[in-house]
Image 1 (spheres, helix red, strand yellow):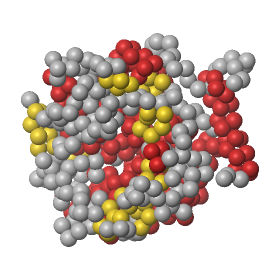
Image 2 (cartoon, one colour):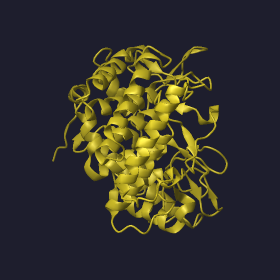
Image 3 (cartoon, rainbow, N blue to C red):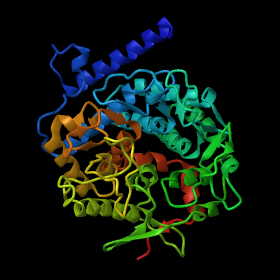
Image 4 (cartoon, helix red, strand yellow):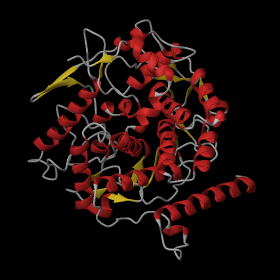
Length: 447
């Protein structure tokens, strides 16, 4: 059980946050109930894209503020769509990847003044202190799933390289956004410096997916294109245990052709979004002879996802030019890694808002049209306390009763980059990242 002092601290934080939100929203003085301090289920029709993104982003941020333990900072992997706190069971365990998105969300909230900055920095310090001194793991890497309150390993989870990387991306983001806070900067330095990336590196220069104490190193590895660019970038940039820059070119880059498009792809759309949430690839390409422009590649992947859905509308009439988007998500039959092209034969008409939402920074006009149409057509069934539900299928009238943290996170970060590029600016201020990109051989797009 928590001590009385900790309970009082949590209450003070919640009360201060609620009062701040009340003032910022310009609510009437008589609205004193804490239950009334969150956004309504469906707000009135918004006049501009900026207002829509403000509303969507603020709701997504609330997930990371409300669904995290204030002492450990650990963010639940998923929660109930109505915003209530779920029971503390393995199903609602914390994810270190969601926590990485959550740290970045604190930086976004500070710029928008959604919560007093003192409270945001307290949350950041608590989170960093937990990972610096308490979180279980090995050689600086952390277990994928943790109990949000105790921080103990759950689900028999692995020490995960990619999930640690997504956590570190958030760590380095707050390191720069709150750079004047000496303790935050020191804790971030300690967490990043503790990670021994060489431990998971094989002779080919390829990184492993991770390790389990029961079996040792996992057999799976990051040897072909996926969401792992953020992992390789952080490993090459490491100030203490770097891997060689040539490892960037050790993994395969499979080309896929779909109609008029040819691009690098090997999985769902989220693999084209996660690394871009932090690394600013705009106007850059790899060293010769590949000269791959990863930003343009991700734009093409989004356009292909849209076209793929349009081409399925004879089978699924809910799909169309302004109603599209499939990526890994929940479905009525369970979690699915929806992929393509070619179209995954399990696609059943489910719409996944984080597919266009995660591409706001890539194809803002296409993504905005899609998201606004989802909101206009399906209202409170699809759009609620934390913004969009994780997935829904209007053909079967199924609306997911749960939210997934990383899916809300990519929407929030992508929206912030689309509006002002601030996540990119904070992350790219880290000198280790800039140096790593130079050593990898990134250069301005030629011609």
